[in-house]
Amino acid sequence: MLNIIKKLNKTKKRCLIILAIFLLIAIFSDLIMPYSHEDISHPPLLKPSTRHFLGTDEIGHDIFSLLIYGFRITIFTAIVSGFLSTFIGISLAYISSYYGKTVKTLISEIANLFIIIPEIVMIMFFSSFAKPKLIYTVMAIVFFSWPKVYKIALFKIMDYMEKNKVKYTLLIKGNWYDVLKKLLPNLLPIMSTFFILQCNKAVMYEASLSFFGIGDPLKKTWGKLIRAALNYDNLYYDSTFLWYLIPPVVCLIVFVITLTLLVSENDNF
Picture 1: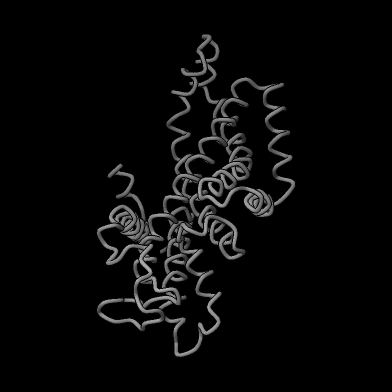
Picture 2: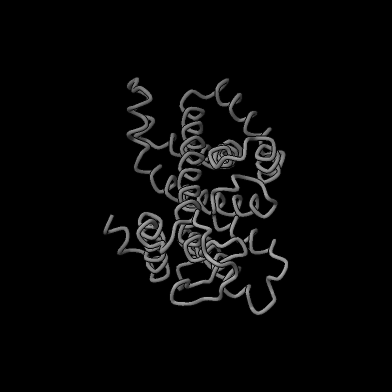
């Protein structure tokens, strides 16, 4: 792992540092938040001060506490959705490659049906009719995100199946586990890249759902915080947007750009 990190360019190393900071904030959010994210006992619409670093919203929440809480929920959503959609897509791609013929045709046709309609449309449709719980948002993202992972991974795995070491394993009647062990060194880089890309998509999908008021209203993700700020009629009065809207927007943009740069093929930075 250390050798892989050492080979990364400066930009990607900085991205890893930023992501590590984000993850630490998410893990230790309870210790960092000065107040509970459910605490509405504060005077509404206070300006930033030593007691409230980003002031308070119109209900009486401490905005800084909501922002820190958003690290936990947003990053949790990204990691779980990214891992599951990547795992399902690559697993089905391997099953299709290993068994071939009927199995491959069946799974590919199902994937094609999902790809016909844009992911975000299906995710919004499903989430709109599901219970307003975070778990259903995650399920929607996973359920409609795996097909593109599957299609690309299938092409890669089928190419790897033609390698001599894999063909030899199949020739001596190796089972699916033996073949998987031979493929694993080639699959791990693909899995890590897909995982990062799917995390990126999950964050953007969640933010899009929040913008349209879809999802669990009690889970204050960055998307929910941005939506709440935009719902405030006097957001741009007396520069309220500077501490209410800008911080979650910046966090969301930094997170998305960091993930994008981490898998970028451009090594000229």
